[in-house]
Length: 201
Image (cartoon, rainbow, N blue to C red; front, side, top):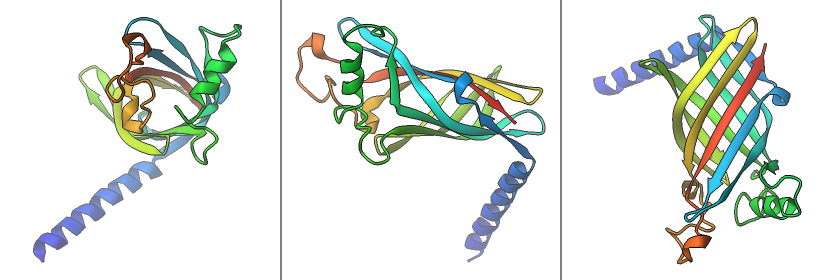
């Protein structure tokens, strides 16, 4: 019984600390026009594609000390661009395939966006490490990555990059780990994501 009470008190204390931190934070809204999400996918043998995903909306919480404490970023999967194919006859076909049921299935309810929720930022040496939950294709998994950010005169900017194993979100099309495919047909499970965000009070 005493163990239960102690656990409950610790949980209440932790919740109080989180509430206090949030109360002392200011909300900065992400400016989609000056923010970008980039992606790069590669094949096993050679080649690949790279492009952008439009930022739909989001916000970050910034403490009085200028530290990012929480945040949410929403990417619009109906606005995918393949930069290496832009201006060619292949662009529409490629983007249409990315948005089909083989990949992001954007016509299914709730699948038209990808959402990252920041849960913590910790300092590791000279770096800040961001941790949070990434949701798309109806799945949520934790991720972490080095984060660079700056807050100056009411504007917060941040950037980072990471590698994502798409199969953890059930995107298995072209994966050599799930299908028997010729080497030149295999799409690597990991793809690269990058972002540069600007948020204002």
